[in-house]
Image (spheres, rainbow over the protein chains, first blue to last red):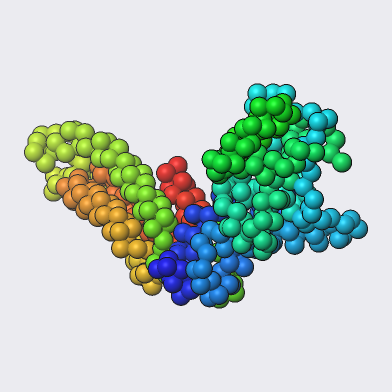
Amino acid sequence: MALLERCRRGELGAFEEIYRAHSGRLYGLVLRMVGNPADAEDLLQEIFLSAHRKLDGFRGESALGTWLYRLATNQCLDHLRSKSARAGQLTDALDDEPAMADGRSRGIADETVARMDLERALAQLPEGCRAAFLLYDVEGLEHREVADALGIAEGTSKSQVHKARLKLRALLGGRTQA
Amino acid sequence: MSCNRYRDAIHELVDGTLGPVRRAELQTHLDVCPECVALVADLQKIRDAAATLDPVQPRDHVWMQIAGRLRQEGRVTVAAPSRHRHLAVFAMAAALVLAIAGSLYVLRLTDTPPPTNTATTENPGATTPVSNDATARGNAVSSDAVQSITDDLAAADQHYQSAISKLQDIAKASGGSLDPDTAAVIDENHKIIDQAIAESRNALQSAPQSAPAQHSLFEALSQKVTLLQSTIALMNEMRKGNSAGAAQLVDRAKKS
C-alpha cells in the first residue's frame, strides 16, 4: 500500500512503477480485445489515466491487478459497443446459451494449436466471452476474479469461458459456428 | 443428449479443478464416448495454446503521453524518481562519464609534447627557440609570434570560462531534479575534466606554444561546456519525466 499512497500524493515515479508492472499484461488483454494496436494504445492510456483518477476510491478489496483488469475490460467493452453502435450493429456482450459439443462438430486436427491461429480465432469471438476467456485462460485469473473484473456472477464467468472454448474449438476445427 | 450432463465436468477436468467423485463419474462416460474424449483433448490444446499468449509490451511513447497528461491535469508533482528511472538515469550518467573520460584518455595519450619542443630551456644551444626564454636570447620575430599566440589563447580561454560560468549558474538554478547518486556521478565527471584542464594549463605554462598542450586544454574546456550543457538538458528532461529524452541525450553524448 505504500506505493499506492505515494501515487495518491501525486508522485509520478510511484505511478510509473505501477505502469511498468501491469502495462504488458493489460496491453496484451486490450490488444486482443480490440484487435488494433493504435486503438489499444489509446485505450491503455485511458485505462491508466482513469486508474490514477480513481485511486482514492480503490480500497484494496481486490488485488490491484484485478482492479486494473476491471477498468481495462470496462474500457474495452465500452469502446467495442460504441464502435458497434456507430456501425449500426448490435452485439451481445455476453452470450446466454453456451454451445455444446455435438457429434457432428469437427475436432482440431493438429496435435497443437498454433499461437497465431488462436489469435485469429479469438478475434472472432463475441466480446463478452472473449474477455472472460482472456482473463481466465490467458491471464490466469480465478473465476471469482473474472467475475469481479467483468461485474458478473461467478457462474456466469464459468459459462462464458466454456462458451468461448467451444466456439474456439469450432473455429479452429474449421466448422462454421451457428 | 447425455453428453450435456458432463459439460461442466469436462471443462473442470481440463482446468484441473474436478473433484475425485465427479472425475470417476466422468471417466465412466469417457470410456464409452469418443466424442467427449475428443472434446477433452481439443479443450486441452486450446488451454495449452492460451498459455503461450504472452504479455505484449506497449511502445515507450504510451507512458510518456500518460505522464504528460497527468502533469497537464496537475495530478502529479515532480518528485524523486522511481527506482526504475533512478537506475536508468544513473546508468545514463555513468555512460556519459565513460564517453567523456574515454575521450580525455585519448587526449592524454597524445598531449605529451615532443622532446624538441621543450628542449630549449635545458639546451641553450638549440637553434629553434620555442619558449619564453627565446625573448631573452633576442629572437624578436619568434617573440612576437609567441606573444600573439599567447594572447589568442588567453582570449579563447576567457571565452570558454565565461561560457562555463554562465552554464554553471544555470545548472545551479536547475539543481534538485537529479537524484544524489546521479549528481555524484556527474560531479565525478566534472572532476575528471577539471583535472585535465589543470594539467593542460600546467603544460602550457612551461611550453605556451605546445600544440598538443593547447589542443588538450581547449578540448577539455570544450568537454566541460558539453558536460554542463548535457547536465542541464538531463535535468530538464528528468523534470519533465522524459526518460526517453534523457536516453537520447546520452546516446548523442556517446556518439559525439
